[in-house]
Length: 79
Length: 101
Image (tube, rainbow over the protein chains, first blue to last red):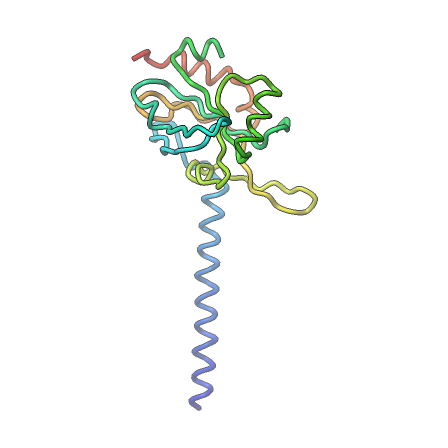
């Protein structure tokens, strides 16, 4: 009897766990597949290395320059 | 490019390539603006433009081609995705219209 209850508990726990995992995955898909940023939003700041290994901070251009961010798929491709 | 510089704008290309690959690419195509490396895909995630590409039945997450224009206050003034992002005319037009100061 106690064993059966234990088994049910395990099954319930596994089910709950997989549902949570599924929900998290679904959320990630949404984040990944849609551009969430719109005109009027603040551009998220970033620090990245340029092609001479120099750090570029987006925030350094605040109040100084307009910035065009052109995201491309891969170097050496037409994409 | 001259038009963008005249409108007080700087341009950054961004991809998941390494700085070394980007430098070789910059020399090959002769770009004058910096190419930035987002090797960890952190910025692509922040900007929500990671896209799955299927190559020989394997999936890869790389950038979706997208162009953002950010003004001097840090506010996004234009978002162009996919094919329309290839032609820079709209980004140039947006920058030209932005206030100079």
